[in-house]
Image (tube, rainbow, N blue to C red):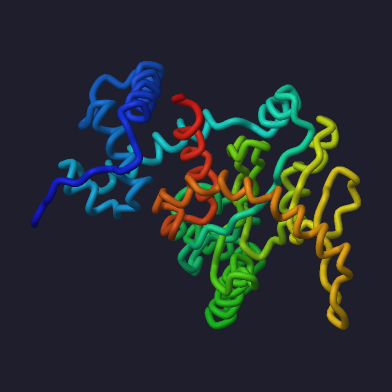
Length: 310
């Protein structure tokens, strides 16, 4: 096996020390007396995973640990970082008390692998353990209920139902706009182009306006008396605090006044793209290979790394 030294561009010792401090405090809190890696080395492992999107096998070989240990260390640190990310209430409080009466709301799509084999999120057992364990528990539960009912299971029917369930999950995460499987993330950007809040992940088939309503973004901004400048993906909101452009009718063109209004709104919303620009450098968000439901946690962890240390 060949090894080579590498760098993490765009990161400094500030993020490394911040994450190492969190890990050190967490180990003291849970009473962990010995680990294969020190807090500093574990922090470097996590930063390499988030920044370069390396596989667990490559990271484990580079740091001299097992694959399961690398996975456990990364998941532990990502959860700690996600807990440090600002909440929606904190973000609205910060925007309201900064002297600004508006903010930018926008959504982004994180590409993911196909979700074949992902357990049904509506099952209670699907949230614990791996996909294989969840499916095994569900199958054992069906067999137990069948024995109690005094009937024999039909393997062909069970296989057909399982195939249909996986197809539904694939359609759930498929984005018709991007023509691939994605996870929808909502964000708030202040007037200076700085990202102040990132949401949990929703399936890629969820539209931006529905996602904003699900996370309670519009209701919270109404309470904070903030005006949201949004794109056409938020058209249809009945809130007076949501300002969007004008859609062009299919049968005719927009009037010059409407085109001027759209052009003015687009020039103001150009700062919103600066909020998402730093996320483009984290390769973990270029193609997330892990469980889709962990995408929001990873995005929050990255947001905490970009905002909290400074």
